[in-house]
Length: 95
Image (tube, rainbow, N blue to C red; front, side, top):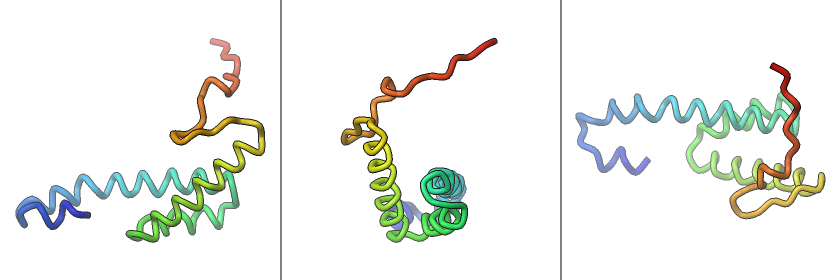
């Protein structure tokens, strides 16, 4: 968001081309995680709220705390940067 004020007017369309896919990707991943933790309706709501500046940060905070609590309730250790992936069993793959 700060980049739009720092870039010259001629470069702002390039910023939009770069930022739009990132915003859509973030909304999709928020939807997928919140669908697992809550329901489809809440997932859609959280995905849309992610697109609103500052409201999206609160949405991510709520979703992150719920995901951390769910992992800890199921016996996984979660640190500041998330859970250590070695705690999770990998499914056997047959090729």
